[in-house]
Length: 116
Image (cartoon, rainbow, N blue to C red; front, side, top):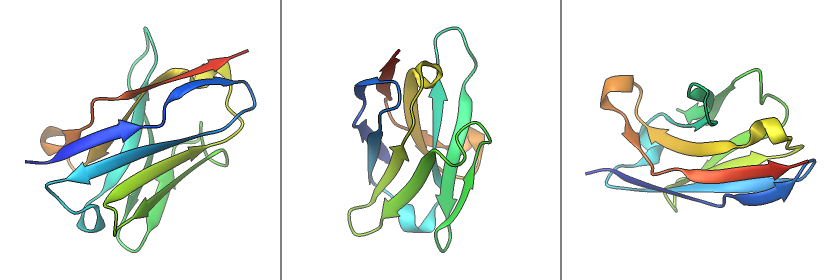
């Protein structure tokens, strides 16, 4: 059974940075698509970024140039480095593993709050 555990969320001032981590067990991130979503209160879930294959990465336009996804295969952990945060980035951030929506595994989420 796949388990994903996010960490690294917290409160940060606008313009600041945070690095989220997602530690996986039960499956290797090296051979899977892994990525991040977020969901702000009252808003739909928003896909942010993914990494797969030989470290191929894709980003949503809303975070391109500010967020960087990376992974450490030895630690079976995926990271989301976030810079230039704004209050609009306030949300619960979730990591996922798997290519297809109906078979993905999800973490429990980590709260990111950006104060103005």
